[in-house]
Image (tube, rainbow, N blue to C red; front, side, top):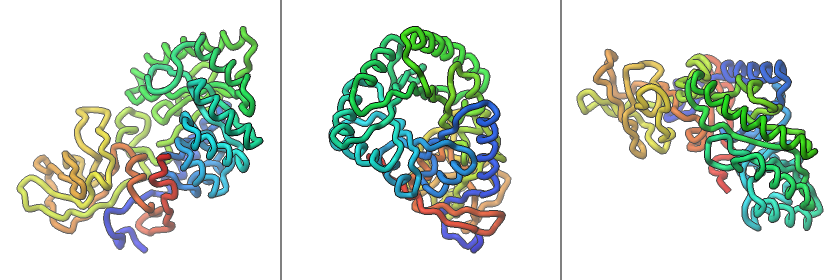
Length: 364
């Protein structure tokens, strides 16, 4: 089958570009003695997680228990759940998974730790735990070294839990390199205080896990970090390019769409709207648009309704016709993938493989 024969909207991955992205990240991590534990929320596909492991990853990261279950069913057993597991039922599901997998969870509260401890102890299993530190993103994680040490001590005292170290997510590093460098100074000051306090208290840190795709190739510049968890790097997207963490040539994924209307002067409508593309805004430049049209940089996807993408083509020199097919790099690839049932892996114009997005919708 050829790409031109696919019904649209269709999610396309250039296999050569994807493989190059995987190799480059693995080579970087090997060269800097960093463990690579990619976040599979980007693709949610066990086959791609196995490709990441085959290319050098030590294991994978997921966000939710449902994703962990999908990956375990796909034969992957070394899994970090980088999300607080809260609630009795979720703790019991975690304990059941721990019977079959080498599981680690991150958390930032004694409440979460106690619930997990009770569930895994009843099941007769153990899970690893990373205490989460907030390094400035202000989402999850404790914000100072003293509180973090107290949490680590509590984790160590609870049955069924193995304290392995620390985790942080520099989510605010989705900015240009100069700004990342300035923010990293403050993050490293905090990490230095944490490392010093834990060393003085005699609490070993086997793992200090950090990183994100924007800062992926800067993982060695964070003090004490020995593991990184990039996700988007496998495909990249418009936002990754916008903050100079990738180039357009590194974008392995795009959505093929069809122009379905040109009746309004200066406008064209494509058959992909908010149920096809992420509604996340562009994080660089003027912040406009919901994707990059590869064939026409002058076109702007200025609005999304459910099934319609609204293109402003007033600045374009291209003549748009009903039936034209376009290739759109989404602003944010992770939620875009989560909107689709399958992804087509291609080399050139030929479809080589089709993957089911097995983890789609696994938000629990």
